[in-house]
Each structure stands twice: as structure tokens, then as C-alpha cells.
Length: 134
Image 1 (cartoon, helix red, strand yellow):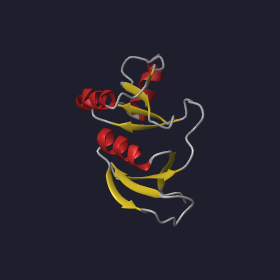
Image 2 (cartoon, one colour; image 1 turned 30 degrees about the horizontal axis):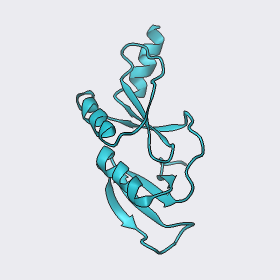
Image 3 (tube, rainbow, N blue to C red; image 1 turned 60 degrees about the horizontal axis):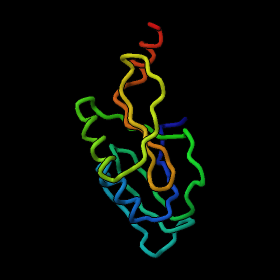
């Protein structure tokens, strides 16, 4: 039986630049760095973000940008804090998808390796409730 998501791995060109991204935006805590060692397929670092294990590994970035993304839930009161952090790193925003009022606010933005991230204030139950009302 699946217990949950173990970890999420992102391939990045520059481990230090990616570290800056995760620490400055998500307040990630670095819990491991392989240094020059390679225990997996490349040099890597592990972080914890809101209890979730995030791994980054050195490699080639995505050649194109897509809508595939990971969304992090944040309280409505912190939405502007995250927007400010993203802007300070001069990251590219993606236009949000059309929204139904009340389903939550979102910011979509790309990291330095074309991964798409979302900051979202809503929940699945709230979204489904709003969809039923439409």
C-alpha cells in the first residue's frame, strides 16, 4: 500500500544556484550534500520543505518549459511574502490559468532549469466545492 510520496527529485545544472532557489523561496533546510562524491547517478543535495524530502541532482536542465509542475500550499496571509521572494530572484512567472472565484490564489514560476513551481493557497476540498457550484 502506498504511504505517500517519498521524495521529489529535480535535475539541475548548478547545485549551488538551485540551493539558493530552494532556500530563499521555500526556506528549505539542507540535510545532505554529497560534495564531490557520487552515491547515486550524480552529485546531489537533499532538502526538507514542509516535511517533504526534495532532492536535487546535477545534470542537464529541461530544454523546454511545460505545465508539468509541483505546487506548494501556503496560507493566504503569506501569499505576498512568497511573491516577493520569487521577484527578488528575478524568476520568470507563467500566466495563471483561469480561476473560479474562491478556489484559491496561485503564482506559477520557473526555476533556473525550466521546472515549473506553483504557490497555491487553496485545498482540494475547497476547489471541488467551488467546481460543484459552477
